[in-house]
Length: 405
Image 1 (cartoon, rainbow, N blue to C red):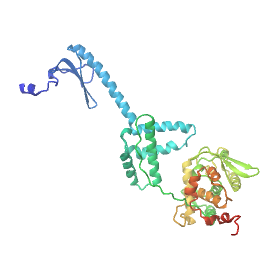
Image 2: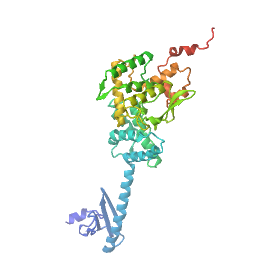
Image 3: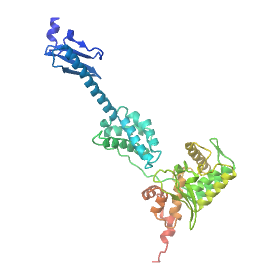
């Protein structure tokens, strides 16, 4: 026993003096030590040991001081926990989405923005950065994440979207003064791939095969191919719409204009980019009026609040999937799935074709007007839509009013 007393530190608690505080956690106690004449407090919580001198030799007063010390430490731990929760990447991301929802409600952002971004966060980003604080995220962490998801052979454009989303969350943390700086983001080498389109002969073949499949009442995934798909193809070629615009396009979004010029004025409720009205080519009016007669003849709903295409499919995601499946069937049957240089064709190729037809047959239409009406930018047209455009396609414009030299 004497040996134990000789080797024990003077600041160690005297075992027989250790006293727990009634009605408080057992890890809270007061004790005496050889190094001081006062009572001391010790409190063990969350793997941390807190100690403090009571500055009194009175045991009852020391007990009351211990109770106050317990309250102070408990408040401090709660504050640290809350602060830690705020710094979690997942919580910062959720708060960013909430703030972004205000912009969506004011129609300053696409209504599907939060849905699309939350899907990426929940499926990939949250699991990888689980329990990670925004203050601890460095370039190496983000780069490792990109290398991790790259194993799925994702396209560079998809990897870029993940980087942009992580950067957006960190920008939110910076605005909230949770971090002092944003680490540099990994760079992704992007390659501009021109979208597959249809030249005049291919487009005629596409329409011919569509008529044949409609005539044969082809069924694709439990859905009959009707004249609606044929009309839809021609409608897109004459309207510049994106396939995503068709998802929620209703008859009330379309106004028929017949004045000096005949066209449809289309004002969708929302769009991928800006939501300015689109004006169509003259032929779109004839196509749309035919569709209305077709619906009336077949007793298909076509009131102002009904959807223009596939109105019987109330699940609009399923409606778009149906469109893609049926169009893919047409591409396969017409042997037009790929271009002559191997580019994949999809429903989006109809929009690309509409823009290319204007560039080659539009009588010197300026790119700004075309870009505004197609709800895109001049840069996007030059980089993607007009990439296949060659001088030979517009030889008539090159030689127009040319003088013999």
